[in-house]
Amino acid sequence: MSGHVESAIQAVRNALEESGDPVEVAFSLPRDSAEKILELLEAEGRNGAVVVPIKEQFTTTEAAKMLGISRSTLMKLIDSGEIDSVKVASHHRIAAPAILRYENARSANQHRTAEALEAFAHDAKEAFRDNVTFGGPS
Image (tube, rainbow, N blue to C red; front, side, top):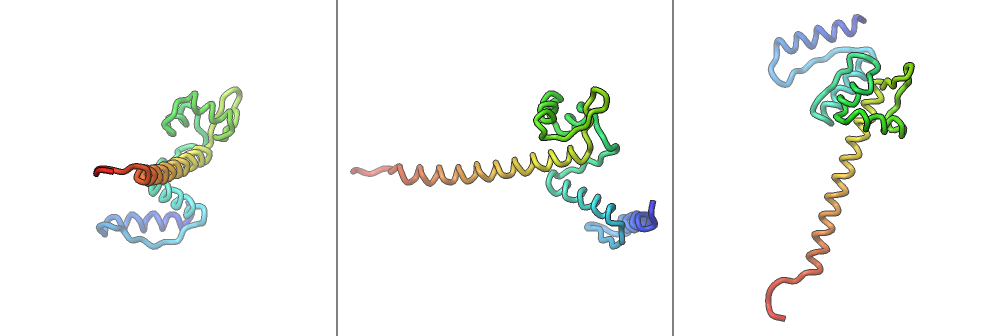
């Protein structure tokens, strides 16, 4: 572990022991460590949870469980090219970044779909009001 990483770990530990909420910490990190922290914070912001992969590649069963889908659905996504995988002998393995890319794309798609449904509901409500009259003699 580099000296920067060790000092950053110690700075976070010290800040957690000394302060309340929020915790304020300042430290220097190598770029790759800073990028990993950014990924964690972005994942927490999007999903409210963070999954830290403990290995580089996952079996299809593990990846499906992480994504909350069935293994057969995952295999269809692999076959269609939506999720990248590599073959190890006769088995597929999915790299952690490929799982994250798919989850980010799925999350963005769900957000766009929700926005489109909201716009449709608003337009339908306006169209309904324009075409319907209530009460009173004619």
